[in-house]
Amino acid sequence: MNTRHAEIRAQQRGIPPMVEQLLDLYGQEEYDGRGAITLYLNKNSIRNMERDLGRRAVSRLAEWFDAYKVKTTDGRTITIGHRTRRLRRK
Image 1: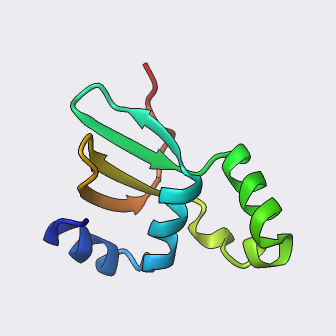
Image 2: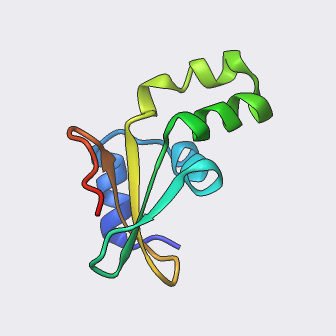
């Protein structure tokens, strides 16, 4: 379930719905300390995608490997974007 804000941001940032689904399936979840969960793709996520989908298919998705998704703890998507900096970890 997405908020209207998340749908608008995904469209503005050129992130297709398929990438959001991949983040849900393969993304690394990390609690941000402010009441939300950030999902992003890391090496293990990409390796798992290659195992399930094949290397060639995953290589075509490389331009979206920097995508991230922020969702609430109850599963509503807050926003979607492209990482331009490293994720802050606590």
